[in-house]
Length: 352
Image (cartoon, helix red, strand yellow):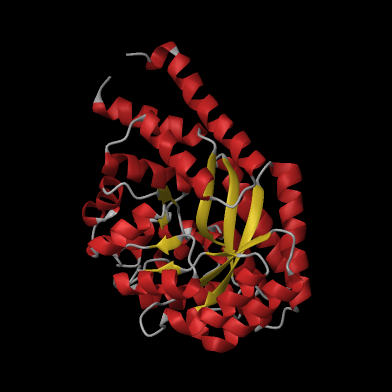
């Protein structure tokens, strides 16, 4: 089989592979079609309503520009029906990629500050979650995210909604937005409150700042997974700690290039993470904004790490293992992943 044919065969395998995704943003997953619909509903917004123009709009100069564009899309979510529509359609896109389970990073403060009542917001995502599972076979869970750029007011509001309303699908508590100028330790009280009611700690760290931000997330926020962790490999002691404690990294290769956190894919530290034996999971972050999806991210990772179908399957099982699914759910999805590999191996077209 030629290299081109082998790559195509691997992409077909990835497309059919049952998957879990752990680092993917709610609003950032809005497809151009949905963004265009929302922009048309809100014509006073800055966002183009022409899907072709959106591709140019989603070209980022740097991380700060990405945040600016991202927030302009957030501004399109203005009522509970917008929230439900977005959430269900994100699940529909996931179903097309054979994503069976996803922990969606949701930022309720971005909607409540724009006038959507907190309970209406939670009811809308819960309604979409139930419909997605029943109609699409996609299981969604929520990680409520503090938008770091909005300061401690947003942290208080996010913690309040997470601990007082506690929608049924809520499993995690996170921290996103820019890292530069937003030190992690100040958010400790809010993470303490969330962890006290049983939520898991999943902050972003070490994406656009150095390894110290990851240490801060671990020491002050009790991080159980690290969102991105791109600069972790710069600190051997941190690499040792992450490895010894089996703390997963939520790696998003294309995102890191799009936001200029990493210059090129060839320079991406995923190789060093993998070589060090760290628990790497593959994720798409804000897929339509970055012109990607989870299938493409797996193909990118397979190329960078020189993986075949067996290696890709191991990555998929990493995500299941690192998820907050219950044991029965992990076992079922793991068995489905193994079954996909077994069927591939049994196909005469793939035998050596």
